[in-house]
Amino acid sequence: MYKLSRYNYFIDYKDRKLFFNGLKGNGFCMTMDEYNHLQRMLSDLKEFEQQFPDDFERLKGLGYIVEESFDEVTYIRFMNKQQVFADRHYHLIINPTLSCNFKCWYCYEENKGGKMSNATILRIKKHIKNKVEKEHIPSLHIGWFGGEPLIGFENVVYPISMYAKRLCKKNNIPFSSSITTNGFLINKDMVEKIKRTGLSSFQITLDGDKEKHNSVRNNNGEPSYERIIENIRLICTEIKHSHINLRINYDEKTFTREDIFSLLEEFPQEIRTKININTQRVWQTSDKKEDKEKNLLPKFISSAHEKGYKLTCQGSLNIGSFYTCYASRMNYANINYDGKVYKCTARNYTDKNFLGELDTNGNIIWQMDKIAKMYSSSSIENKECLECEYLPLCCGQCIQNFMEHGSGCRYRNNRQNFFNEEIKRYYTNLRLNHSKQKVK
Image (cartoon, rainbow, N blue to C red; front, side, top):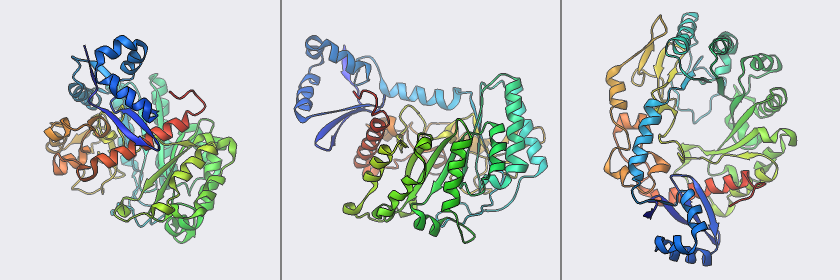
């Protein structure tokens, strides 16, 4: 016996209907006649299976139809626990400094400054050694964050990266690294050293076209747009397997100017497949209305695809991840330049938010009262989340908000509209990224 998944959605998509499953992340479009026919078939699954066995099996394989005995909510709860607690792959984010050469108005970090001491560097190396040789982690990923992490490239990023790379190679486990940087401080000599470390994944931000970007992101008044563009070209050309997550921060006016399309012409065709376009609204402007008639964002995304760039699909959805972000996992830590340990990188680095500290032997001494509060129960373990039709797309509060405020829906006042728009964005970008393949 079979039943329909509780996480199926029919969404208006241009002049068609989009049929999407939130648990599997599968979707396809159909005409209105096809939609009406499918609705009739889905109203009687037994007859559907008998009359159209191939179509029935296809929908079952894609997650739209499930076994009568399959409890999808229980499955999500189980997967949440497994991914949060049982995943042993270690993710370590390190802040060499909270100093930055830019002063972006929307930056949430208040405690800027400080640099990592040699003593803290030694503790971090011991911490990595403990994880690799004592706890036998199956892999290590280091993410560099800040502040601007490349301020500490020579003294922190490079030596720790080389140490971790050699240690992982010696113990035959995979090592990878990534960095969130404004990209201004990169140069040819640095790129040569970066190549030795294995660092290949970069998140770099632009704030729109040249004029808009330079008004927000500048090096103590010095324009930064052209230099960042040149450095992205340098990375893509010199680092063989590099990948750029090009985050474009925007407000209600950024995509009302035709000048924004000039950004897409900045990179030669041969490197565009290494660049992933990721548009993100500056959250402090989310309450400001956009002029929908002048909104060029959909056209910009379509143009980016046509010009050979990759597009971010996931957006705010957690498809395939049964937790809200990497900070939710137990086998993750964020070590600040002063040796204090945090989970969330989207909070100020204050005594209020720190959760532990590295000791001289490289062990994290956690504040167990805070950790217990954070992990004793999942943010989805409440009636509102467990009954919500969008549970696999959302996975509840982020762990930091949950610790601070308890359970509660982030999207309660605009839930259906928000997820419908995110699903359409996900499907559109996924389809564009795979447009050369057969789209089902």
